[in-house]
Image 1: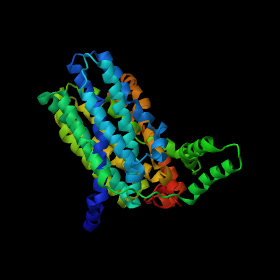
Image 2: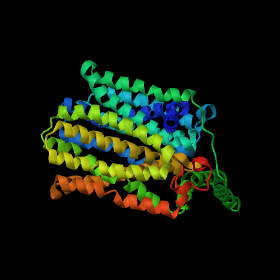
Image 3: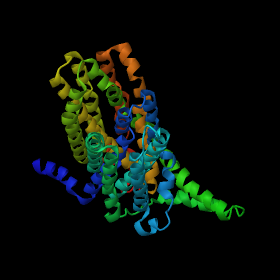
Image 4: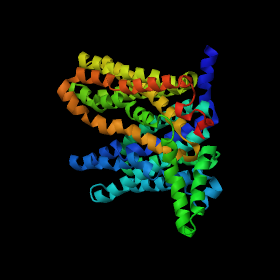
Length: 457
Protein backbone atom coordinates (compact mmCIF):
# COMPACT_ATOMS: atom_id res chain seq x y z
CA UNK A 1 0.00 0.00 0.00
CA UNK A 2 2.74 2.46 1.00
CA UNK A 3 4.74 1.44 -2.06
CA UNK A 4 1.72 2.22 -4.28
CA UNK A 5 1.43 5.70 -2.80
CA UNK A 6 5.16 6.29 -3.25
CA UNK A 7 4.87 5.37 -6.92
CA UNK A 8 1.84 7.64 -7.30
CA UNK A 9 3.76 10.67 -6.02
CA UNK A 10 7.13 9.69 -7.54
CA UNK A 11 5.78 10.68 -10.95
CA UNK A 12 6.11 14.32 -9.88
CA UNK A 13 9.89 13.87 -10.11
CA UNK A 14 9.68 12.88 -13.77
CA UNK A 15 11.53 15.41 -15.96
CA UNK A 16 8.51 16.05 -18.16
CA UNK A 17 6.19 16.64 -15.20
CA UNK A 18 8.72 19.11 -13.72
CA UNK A 19 8.77 20.91 -17.08
CA UNK A 20 4.98 21.15 -16.94
CA UNK A 21 5.17 22.66 -13.44
CA UNK A 22 7.54 25.35 -14.74
CA UNK A 23 5.24 26.09 -17.67
CA UNK A 24 2.33 26.34 -15.23
CA UNK A 25 4.36 28.98 -13.38
CA UNK A 26 4.88 30.94 -16.60
CA UNK A 27 1.18 30.60 -17.40
CA UNK A 28 0.04 31.99 -14.05
CA UNK A 29 2.33 35.03 -13.85
CA UNK A 30 0.59 37.50 -16.20
CA UNK A 31 -2.97 37.08 -14.88
CA UNK A 32 -2.75 39.22 -11.73
CA UNK A 33 -0.56 41.77 -13.53
CA UNK A 34 -3.70 42.79 -15.42
CA UNK A 35 -6.13 42.07 -12.58
CA UNK A 36 -5.77 42.60 -8.82
CA UNK A 37 -2.12 43.75 -8.84
CA UNK A 38 -2.89 46.28 -11.57
CA UNK A 39 -5.97 47.39 -9.62
CA UNK A 40 -3.80 48.02 -6.54
CA UNK A 41 -1.42 50.09 -8.67
CA UNK A 42 -4.27 52.16 -10.13
CA UNK A 43 -5.81 52.72 -6.70
CA UNK A 44 -2.47 53.82 -5.23
CA UNK A 45 -2.25 56.45 -7.97
CA UNK A 46 -5.70 57.83 -7.19
CA UNK A 47 -7.53 56.41 -10.22
CA UNK A 48 -11.33 56.33 -9.70
CA UNK A 49 -13.13 53.14 -8.75
CA UNK A 50 -15.23 53.43 -11.91
CA UNK A 51 -12.14 53.41 -14.11
CA UNK A 52 -10.60 50.55 -12.12
CA UNK A 53 -13.80 48.55 -12.55
CA UNK A 54 -13.71 49.07 -16.32
CA UNK A 55 -10.18 47.64 -16.36
CA UNK A 56 -11.67 44.27 -15.42
CA UNK A 57 -12.68 43.98 -19.09
CA UNK A 58 -9.04 43.53 -20.11
CA UNK A 59 -9.39 39.88 -19.09
CA UNK A 60 -11.82 39.19 -21.96
CA UNK A 61 -9.17 37.46 -24.14
CA UNK A 62 -9.01 34.57 -21.66
CA UNK A 63 -12.65 33.70 -22.40
CA UNK A 64 -12.26 34.14 -26.17
CA UNK A 65 -8.94 32.39 -26.77
CA UNK A 66 -10.59 29.55 -28.68
CA UNK A 67 -11.27 32.03 -31.53
CA UNK A 68 -7.60 32.29 -32.53
CA UNK A 69 -6.42 28.93 -31.21
CA UNK A 70 -6.70 27.33 -34.70
CA UNK A 71 -3.98 29.69 -35.94
CA UNK A 72 -1.63 28.65 -33.15
CA UNK A 73 -2.62 25.02 -33.61
CA UNK A 74 -1.90 24.72 -37.32
CA UNK A 75 -0.13 27.80 -38.73
CA UNK A 76 3.66 27.31 -39.14
CA UNK A 77 5.98 30.21 -38.30
CA UNK A 78 8.82 31.15 -40.64
CA UNK A 79 12.16 29.86 -39.31
CA UNK A 80 10.89 29.25 -35.75
CA UNK A 81 8.74 26.24 -36.67
CA UNK A 82 11.57 24.73 -38.71
CA UNK A 83 14.17 25.25 -35.95
CA UNK A 84 12.13 24.58 -32.79
CA UNK A 85 8.97 22.82 -33.96
CA UNK A 86 5.29 23.74 -33.96
CA UNK A 87 4.66 24.14 -30.20
CA UNK A 88 8.07 25.42 -29.08
CA UNK A 89 8.30 27.92 -31.95
CA UNK A 90 4.97 29.51 -31.07
CA UNK A 91 5.76 29.36 -27.36
CA UNK A 92 9.07 31.21 -27.72
CA UNK A 93 7.60 33.91 -29.98
CA UNK A 94 4.67 34.59 -27.68
CA UNK A 95 6.83 34.66 -24.54
CA UNK A 96 9.29 37.16 -26.05
CA UNK A 97 6.39 39.43 -27.01
CA UNK A 98 4.81 38.93 -23.56
CA UNK A 99 8.00 39.93 -21.75
CA UNK A 100 8.22 43.11 -23.85
CA UNK A 101 4.53 43.90 -23.23
CA UNK A 102 4.85 43.43 -19.44
CA UNK A 103 7.91 45.71 -19.38
CA UNK A 104 6.02 48.34 -21.40
CA UNK A 105 3.03 48.08 -19.06
CA UNK A 106 5.28 48.53 -16.03
CA UNK A 107 6.88 51.61 -17.59
CA UNK A 108 3.53 53.36 -18.14
CA UNK A 109 2.27 56.23 -15.97
CA UNK A 110 -1.37 55.50 -15.03
CA UNK A 111 -2.07 59.16 -14.21
CA UNK A 112 -0.97 60.65 -17.52
CA UNK A 113 -1.19 57.59 -19.79
CA UNK A 114 -4.27 55.70 -18.61
CA UNK A 115 -5.48 54.97 -22.16
CA UNK A 116 -2.09 53.61 -23.17
CA UNK A 117 -2.05 51.50 -20.02
CA UNK A 118 -5.44 50.02 -20.92
CA UNK A 119 -4.21 49.08 -24.40
CA UNK A 120 -1.06 47.49 -23.01
CA UNK A 121 -3.04 45.60 -20.37
CA UNK A 122 -5.28 44.14 -23.10
CA UNK A 123 -2.16 43.22 -25.08
CA UNK A 124 -0.66 41.44 -22.05
CA UNK A 125 -3.92 39.56 -21.49
CA UNK A 126 -4.11 38.58 -25.18
CA UNK A 127 -0.51 37.32 -25.21
CA UNK A 128 -1.06 35.56 -21.88
CA UNK A 129 -4.16 33.78 -23.22
CA UNK A 130 -2.19 32.85 -26.35
CA UNK A 131 0.61 31.50 -24.16
CA UNK A 132 -1.96 29.37 -22.34
CA UNK A 133 -3.07 27.86 -25.67
CA UNK A 134 0.48 26.75 -26.44
CA UNK A 135 1.28 25.55 -22.91
CA UNK A 136 -1.91 23.50 -22.60
CA UNK A 137 -1.32 21.85 -25.97
CA UNK A 138 2.36 21.21 -25.20
CA UNK A 139 1.48 19.63 -21.83
CA UNK A 140 -1.20 17.33 -23.24
CA UNK A 141 1.04 16.17 -26.09
CA UNK A 142 4.22 15.85 -24.02
CA UNK A 143 2.84 13.62 -21.26
CA UNK A 144 1.81 9.98 -21.54
CA UNK A 145 -1.77 9.01 -20.74
CA UNK A 146 -0.88 7.87 -17.20
CA UNK A 147 0.88 11.19 -16.54
CA UNK A 148 -2.06 13.45 -17.37
CA UNK A 149 -3.35 13.42 -13.78
CA UNK A 150 -0.01 14.34 -12.17
CA UNK A 151 0.56 16.77 -15.03
CA UNK A 152 -2.70 18.52 -14.17
CA UNK A 153 -1.62 18.72 -10.52
CA UNK A 154 1.80 20.06 -11.51
CA UNK A 155 0.48 22.74 -13.85
CA UNK A 156 -2.00 23.94 -11.22
CA UNK A 157 0.73 24.01 -8.57
CA UNK A 158 2.97 26.09 -10.82
CA UNK A 159 0.05 28.37 -11.61
CA UNK A 160 -0.70 28.99 -7.93
CA UNK A 161 2.97 29.66 -7.13
CA UNK A 162 3.03 32.21 -9.93
CA UNK A 163 -0.09 33.93 -8.63
CA UNK A 164 1.57 34.25 -5.23
CA UNK A 165 4.62 35.80 -6.92
CA UNK A 166 2.56 38.15 -9.12
CA UNK A 167 0.22 39.02 -6.24
CA UNK A 168 1.90 39.37 -2.86
CA UNK A 169 5.42 39.25 -4.36
CA UNK A 170 4.77 42.07 -6.82
CA UNK A 171 3.14 44.21 -4.12
CA UNK A 172 6.15 43.80 -1.82
CA UNK A 173 8.52 44.73 -4.65
CA UNK A 174 6.40 47.74 -5.63
CA UNK A 175 6.37 48.94 -2.02
CA UNK A 176 10.15 48.71 -1.78
CA UNK A 177 11.37 49.59 -5.28
CA UNK A 178 8.46 50.98 -7.29
CA UNK A 179 6.01 49.58 -9.81
CA UNK A 180 8.36 49.35 -12.77
CA UNK A 181 10.77 47.24 -10.73
CA UNK A 182 7.90 44.95 -9.72
CA UNK A 183 6.72 44.44 -13.30
CA UNK A 184 10.30 44.06 -14.57
CA UNK A 185 10.86 41.30 -12.02
CA UNK A 186 7.71 39.50 -13.21
CA UNK A 187 8.87 39.85 -16.82
CA UNK A 188 12.20 38.27 -15.85
CA UNK A 189 10.43 35.36 -14.18
CA UNK A 190 8.64 34.63 -17.47
CA UNK A 191 12.06 33.46 -18.65
CA UNK A 192 11.34 30.20 -16.80
CA UNK A 193 8.91 29.24 -19.56
CA UNK A 194 11.36 30.24 -22.28
CA UNK A 195 13.97 27.90 -20.84
CA UNK A 196 11.54 24.98 -21.06
CA UNK A 197 10.72 25.73 -24.70
CA UNK A 198 14.39 26.29 -25.55
CA UNK A 199 15.73 23.07 -24.05
CA UNK A 200 12.66 20.82 -23.84
CA UNK A 201 11.62 18.33 -26.52
CA UNK A 202 9.10 19.03 -29.25
CA UNK A 203 6.13 16.63 -28.87
CA UNK A 204 5.55 14.25 -31.77
CA UNK A 205 2.48 14.98 -33.88
CA UNK A 206 0.15 11.96 -33.88
CA UNK A 207 -2.76 11.82 -36.29
CA UNK A 208 -5.39 9.10 -36.06
CA UNK A 209 -6.79 7.29 -39.11
CA UNK A 210 -10.16 9.05 -38.67
CA UNK A 211 -8.48 12.47 -38.60
CA UNK A 212 -6.41 11.71 -41.70
CA UNK A 213 -9.53 10.50 -43.52
CA UNK A 214 -11.48 13.63 -42.61
CA UNK A 215 -8.78 15.94 -43.94
CA UNK A 216 -8.24 13.77 -47.03
CA UNK A 217 -11.88 14.41 -47.95
CA UNK A 218 -11.11 18.13 -48.13
CA UNK A 219 -8.29 17.45 -50.55
CA UNK A 220 -10.58 15.24 -52.67
CA UNK A 221 -13.22 17.96 -52.69
CA UNK A 222 -10.74 20.52 -54.00
CA UNK A 223 -9.27 18.13 -56.55
CA UNK A 224 -12.74 17.56 -58.03
CA UNK A 225 -13.24 21.30 -58.54
CA UNK A 226 -10.61 22.68 -60.93
CA UNK A 227 -11.82 26.25 -60.48
CA UNK A 228 -10.58 26.17 -56.88
CA UNK A 229 -6.89 26.47 -57.55
CA UNK A 230 -3.98 28.50 -56.25
CA UNK A 231 -4.34 30.71 -53.15
CA UNK A 232 -8.12 30.19 -52.93
CA UNK A 233 -7.71 26.42 -52.73
CA UNK A 234 -4.86 26.69 -50.22
CA UNK A 235 -6.83 29.00 -47.93
CA UNK A 236 -9.95 26.83 -48.19
CA UNK A 237 -8.03 23.66 -47.37
CA UNK A 238 -6.24 25.30 -44.44
CA UNK A 239 -9.44 26.73 -42.97
CA UNK A 240 -11.13 23.35 -43.23
CA UNK A 241 -8.28 21.55 -41.49
CA UNK A 242 -7.59 24.22 -38.86
CA UNK A 243 -11.08 25.46 -38.01
CA UNK A 244 -13.77 23.06 -39.20
CA UNK A 245 -12.06 19.74 -38.48
CA UNK A 246 -11.35 20.32 -34.75
CA UNK A 247 -15.01 21.10 -34.05
CA UNK A 248 -16.30 18.43 -36.46
CA UNK A 249 -14.06 15.90 -34.73
CA UNK A 250 -15.47 16.80 -31.33
CA UNK A 251 -19.17 16.88 -32.24
CA UNK A 252 -18.84 13.58 -34.12
CA UNK A 253 -18.23 11.77 -30.83
CA UNK A 254 -20.99 10.07 -28.90
CA UNK A 255 -22.18 12.11 -25.93
CA UNK A 256 -20.44 15.37 -26.80
CA UNK A 257 -23.33 17.51 -25.53
CA UNK A 258 -23.17 15.73 -22.18
CA UNK A 259 -19.45 16.47 -22.00
CA UNK A 260 -20.04 20.18 -22.62
CA UNK A 261 -22.70 20.28 -19.90
CA UNK A 262 -20.39 18.49 -17.47
CA UNK A 263 -17.49 20.85 -18.15
CA UNK A 264 -19.70 23.91 -17.63
CA UNK A 265 -21.44 22.65 -14.49
CA UNK A 266 -18.69 20.76 -12.68
CA UNK A 267 -17.31 23.76 -10.75
CA UNK A 268 -20.49 25.87 -10.74
CA UNK A 269 -21.14 25.61 -6.99
CA UNK A 270 -17.52 26.31 -6.12
CA UNK A 271 -17.55 29.38 -8.41
CA UNK A 272 -20.75 30.75 -6.87
CA UNK A 273 -19.45 30.31 -3.33
CA UNK A 274 -16.01 31.72 -4.16
CA UNK A 275 -17.55 34.84 -5.68
CA UNK A 276 -19.13 35.75 -2.33
CA UNK A 277 -16.55 34.36 0.10
CA UNK A 278 -14.72 37.63 0.82
CA UNK A 279 -18.02 39.49 1.10
CA UNK A 280 -19.10 37.03 3.79
CA UNK A 281 -15.83 37.42 5.67
CA UNK A 282 -16.00 41.23 5.64
CA UNK A 283 -19.63 41.24 6.78
CA UNK A 284 -18.70 38.94 9.68
CA UNK A 285 -16.20 41.56 10.85
CA UNK A 286 -12.89 40.07 9.68
CA UNK A 287 -10.23 42.65 8.86
CA UNK A 288 -8.49 42.62 5.50
CA UNK A 289 -5.26 41.62 7.26
CA UNK A 290 -6.98 38.65 8.89
CA UNK A 291 -8.46 37.51 5.58
CA UNK A 292 -5.17 37.95 3.73
CA UNK A 293 -3.10 36.14 6.37
CA UNK A 294 -5.43 33.15 6.63
CA UNK A 295 -5.77 32.96 2.84
CA UNK A 296 -2.00 33.03 2.33
CA UNK A 297 -1.13 30.52 5.06
CA UNK A 298 -4.04 28.09 4.92
CA UNK A 299 -5.58 28.77 1.53
CA UNK A 300 -2.38 28.71 -0.51
CA UNK A 301 -0.99 25.63 1.22
CA UNK A 302 -4.30 23.77 0.95
CA UNK A 303 -4.62 24.57 -2.76
CA UNK A 304 -1.12 23.26 -3.50
CA UNK A 305 -1.77 20.13 -1.43
CA UNK A 306 -5.14 19.58 -3.11
CA UNK A 307 -3.67 19.96 -6.60
CA UNK A 308 -0.82 17.50 -5.92
CA UNK A 309 -2.97 14.96 -4.07
CA UNK A 310 -5.66 15.20 -6.73
CA UNK A 311 -3.18 14.71 -9.56
CA UNK A 312 -1.67 11.62 -7.90
CA UNK A 313 -5.08 10.09 -7.12
CA UNK A 314 -6.27 10.56 -10.71
CA UNK A 315 -3.60 8.04 -11.71
CA UNK A 316 -4.72 5.54 -9.05
CA UNK A 317 -8.48 5.96 -9.42
CA UNK A 318 -8.81 6.80 -13.09
CA UNK A 319 -10.13 10.10 -14.42
CA UNK A 320 -13.85 9.36 -14.18
CA UNK A 321 -13.85 8.00 -10.63
CA UNK A 322 -11.59 10.85 -9.53
CA UNK A 323 -13.97 13.37 -11.13
CA UNK A 324 -16.89 11.90 -9.21
CA UNK A 325 -15.13 11.60 -5.85
CA UNK A 326 -13.52 15.04 -5.99
CA UNK A 327 -16.74 16.61 -7.28
CA UNK A 328 -18.59 15.30 -4.23
CA UNK A 329 -15.83 16.52 -1.90
CA UNK A 330 -15.80 19.90 -3.63
CA UNK A 331 -19.55 20.27 -3.04
CA UNK A 332 -19.23 19.21 0.61
CA UNK A 333 -16.42 21.75 1.00
CA UNK A 334 -19.01 24.51 0.55
CA UNK A 335 -20.69 23.38 3.77
CA UNK A 336 -17.78 24.94 5.65
CA UNK A 337 -19.08 28.32 4.50
CA UNK A 338 -22.31 27.46 6.32
CA UNK A 339 -20.23 26.69 9.41
CA UNK A 340 -18.47 30.04 9.01
CA UNK A 341 -21.73 31.93 8.59
CA UNK A 342 -23.08 30.47 11.82
CA UNK A 343 -19.80 30.77 13.76
CA UNK A 344 -19.45 34.49 13.04
CA UNK A 345 -16.14 36.26 13.66
CA UNK A 346 -14.09 33.20 14.58
CA UNK A 347 -10.56 32.99 13.15
CA UNK A 348 -10.31 29.24 13.76
CA UNK A 349 -13.51 28.68 11.78
CA UNK A 350 -12.11 30.94 9.05
CA UNK A 351 -8.90 28.88 8.85
CA UNK A 352 -10.89 25.66 8.66
CA UNK A 353 -13.25 27.07 6.03
CA UNK A 354 -10.46 28.40 3.80
CA UNK A 355 -8.39 25.21 4.12
CA UNK A 356 -11.31 22.88 3.36
CA UNK A 357 -12.57 24.86 0.38
CA UNK A 358 -9.12 25.27 -1.19
CA UNK A 359 -8.12 21.65 -0.59
CA UNK A 360 -11.23 20.21 -2.25
CA UNK A 361 -11.21 22.79 -5.06
CA UNK A 362 -7.58 21.95 -5.81
CA UNK A 363 -8.37 18.22 -6.02
CA UNK A 364 -11.38 18.79 -8.27
CA UNK A 365 -9.41 21.18 -10.45
CA UNK A 366 -6.70 18.59 -11.09
CA UNK A 367 -9.29 15.97 -12.07
CA UNK A 368 -11.08 18.39 -14.41
CA UNK A 369 -7.85 19.42 -16.16
CA UNK A 370 -6.90 15.76 -16.61
CA UNK A 371 -10.39 15.02 -17.99
CA UNK A 372 -10.28 17.84 -20.53
CA UNK A 373 -6.75 16.84 -21.54
CA UNK A 374 -7.91 13.31 -22.31
CA UNK A 375 -10.68 14.60 -24.57
CA UNK A 376 -8.32 16.33 -26.98
CA UNK A 377 -7.43 14.86 -30.35
CA UNK A 378 -3.65 15.31 -30.66
CA UNK A 379 -4.11 16.70 -34.18
CA UNK A 380 -6.14 19.63 -32.75
CA UNK A 381 -4.95 19.82 -29.13
CA UNK A 382 -4.63 23.60 -28.91
CA UNK A 383 -8.02 24.33 -30.49
CA UNK A 384 -10.04 21.73 -28.59
CA UNK A 385 -8.41 22.41 -25.21
CA UNK A 386 -8.89 26.16 -25.65
CA UNK A 387 -12.58 25.62 -26.39
CA UNK A 388 -13.21 23.31 -23.43
CA UNK A 389 -11.17 25.34 -20.95
CA UNK A 390 -13.04 28.48 -22.02
CA UNK A 391 -16.31 26.74 -21.17
CA UNK A 392 -15.09 26.13 -17.62
CA UNK A 393 -15.11 29.91 -17.18
CA UNK A 394 -18.85 30.11 -17.88
CA UNK A 395 -19.75 29.12 -14.33
CA UNK A 396 -17.19 31.53 -12.93
CA UNK A 397 -18.46 34.49 -14.95
CA UNK A 398 -22.06 34.08 -16.09
CA UNK A 399 -23.68 32.00 -13.34
CA UNK A 400 -21.55 33.31 -10.47
CA UNK A 401 -22.54 36.86 -11.42
CA UNK A 402 -25.96 36.30 -9.82
CA UNK A 403 -24.45 35.12 -6.52
CA UNK A 404 -24.83 38.49 -4.84
CA UNK A 405 -28.55 38.71 -5.65
CA UNK A 406 -29.12 35.14 -4.44
CA UNK A 407 -27.27 35.86 -1.18
CA UNK A 408 -29.46 38.94 -0.61
CA UNK A 409 -32.66 36.96 -1.20
CA UNK A 410 -31.76 33.74 0.62
CA UNK A 411 -29.38 34.86 3.36
CA UNK A 412 -25.91 33.42 3.89
CA UNK A 413 -26.80 29.99 5.26
CA UNK A 414 -29.38 29.13 2.60
CA UNK A 415 -27.19 30.61 -0.14
CA UNK A 416 -24.22 28.41 0.71
CA UNK A 417 -26.51 25.38 1.07
CA UNK A 418 -27.64 26.16 -2.47
CA UNK A 419 -24.03 26.27 -3.70
CA UNK A 420 -23.49 22.87 -2.08
CA UNK A 421 -26.15 21.27 -4.29
CA UNK A 422 -25.53 23.43 -7.39
CA UNK A 423 -23.06 20.90 -8.79
CA UNK A 424 -25.37 17.91 -8.19
CA UNK A 425 -26.81 17.97 -11.76
CA UNK A 426 -23.28 17.77 -13.19
CA UNK A 427 -22.41 14.90 -10.84
CA UNK A 428 -25.60 13.02 -11.75
CA UNK A 429 -24.71 13.54 -15.41
CA UNK A 430 -21.24 12.16 -14.70
CA UNK A 431 -22.77 9.09 -13.04
CA UNK A 432 -24.98 8.54 -16.09
CA UNK A 433 -21.97 8.79 -18.39
CA UNK A 434 -20.08 6.23 -16.30
CA UNK A 435 -23.02 3.82 -16.24
CA UNK A 436 -23.55 4.20 -19.97
CA UNK A 437 -19.95 3.10 -20.46
CA UNK A 438 -19.05 0.96 -17.39
CA UNK A 439 -15.52 0.37 -18.69
CA UNK A 440 -14.80 4.08 -18.23
CA UNK A 441 -15.35 4.03 -14.47
CA UNK A 442 -11.71 3.50 -13.65
CA UNK A 443 -10.26 4.31 -17.03
CA UNK A 444 -7.33 6.62 -17.36
CA UNK A 445 -9.00 8.37 -20.29
CA UNK A 446 -12.56 9.74 -20.52
CA UNK A 447 -15.32 7.87 -22.37
CA UNK A 448 -14.96 10.00 -25.51
CA UNK A 449 -11.34 8.94 -25.84
CA UNK A 450 -12.13 5.23 -25.70
CA UNK A 451 -11.16 3.37 -28.82
CA UNK A 452 -8.52 5.96 -29.72
CA UNK A 453 -4.76 5.86 -29.30
CA UNK A 454 -3.30 7.46 -26.14
CA UNK A 455 -4.02 11.16 -25.60
CA UNK A 456 -6.94 11.11 -28.03
CA UNK A 457 -4.74 10.88 -31.12
